[in-house]
Image (cartoon, rainbow over all chains, first blue to last red; front, side, top):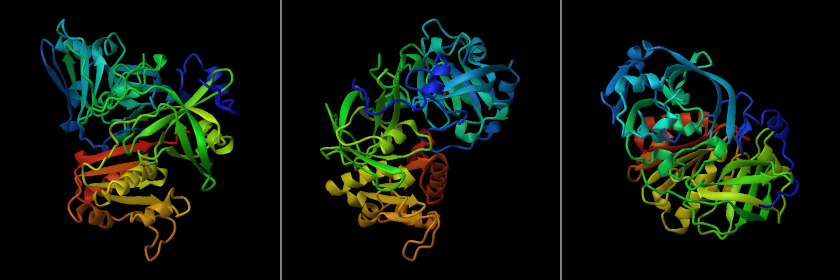
Length: 206
Length: 236
């Protein structure tokens, strides 16, 4: 590919200092947190909200807002990466590990993928192995504050090792599946897995 | 939801035309190699490459009609923007850029529905593509456009929008007899309702603008599930 005449790169200094944390093609927002959504941002009443784990599980389970808060809490502190090329360092999220929910529902041996569903109808698909083993959370706090509506509040999925569209806002259901099928952005040209370190942005990226 | 899975590869684009309509905007007209057919509302990723291989990339909406022999992008300069700054200060006719697109299968309109489209600031760009497409294909009556800017000078494509019959709302200066203000729900309702109720709505702009516009559309009677949103932060 051609070198761009006259381009040297403004952000290379900051990229160099943090190159071990910045995936290819990403830049550091410097603490800003842009938001992206394809839909109207809903305002959800936590008392009306619940989360269900079903599909290929031994016991489909549903938790209310209060029941979810009664589970053992967990925290993620680290970086998040959006496919639109921003990365935000050092964000702390609090909620529960998806492992806790899966342990209660009991995935069947044939379960290999998850479809995360939001209250808005948004969906995103993930390999089951990407949401278990301490890699994914259902969270309601960011940097010590309740998650705002535009960032997916009251509750969102958090899968920080994949591009952030996989971290479904307003999540309400995790459906375990044997076969992969595309979610919302995945049907619209985005990658089925979305690993930022492999730059899997769009369908067809290796 | 429509299945419009695209597999697009990186290619090159030569800048055929470039102009800067004001201090913040750069209009690029690109001759794209191995170009793929676009739908109105889609975007391209532009990638810049330094001699040592360092790259930076950003997404920009397409302003041109899919039938245009060139791909037109209107790029707003962001504060300290690495890509927009280069395109504004350095890029010239003949320069070759890496591009990938068209991308985005959701925020698209090809005349299959009657629609209201509301764009704020540079969020009007993909709606200009829809408008140009509608005009060429005889579907102008199926698309009603609301363009919101601070001033006429700051609104991209302002003259073209006015000439095409778009409703232009300026928030910082009067336009004709209309006093500076964001669009009122009743102004939007007139467009949602007439002559037949719009089946879909499109909103493009900053996060704050998108939130405002979707609320106004809701007050005007548009179902939330019929509204497609494309919003952006200050992402350089």
